[in-house]
Length: 195
Image: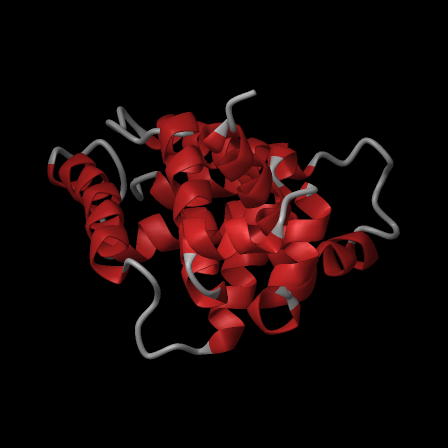
């Protein structure tokens, strides 16, 4: 029977995402990733190199997934900014490992992150969408486009970065309180031009 390299790589990356999200780059071991995937550790090294290369690979893959799932191609107005924030929130809800991977990367405080140039270009494209909408007076220009784009992403992801804080701050809120709705309203308000 032929070895299914693509399936083996998929299993290893899936296991690596889970391990890195749980333990961070410092606490994850290649042995535990391989064991979780049910694959020989030597294959892990031969396919992905060392642990830092593996972390860079899985983080890049996860960022590519969110980019494909929640594209930002244009903003027709403040409501579109709110809808985009809600879509990002939904993605994080379904893929909580992404937030954790980004937090672990931030905790590492690297002078340069893996694939920084390509990731910077990705974020530049997002900022350009916000800038174009501001120039066309479809959304508020009270904040610089990079700040507005960052704040929208930060608001969407922070619920999953510190769920314990969200839980405690909403301890006395009605059970029907919907963080997604609050986020959507806040992002819409940030993008609404002053009258």
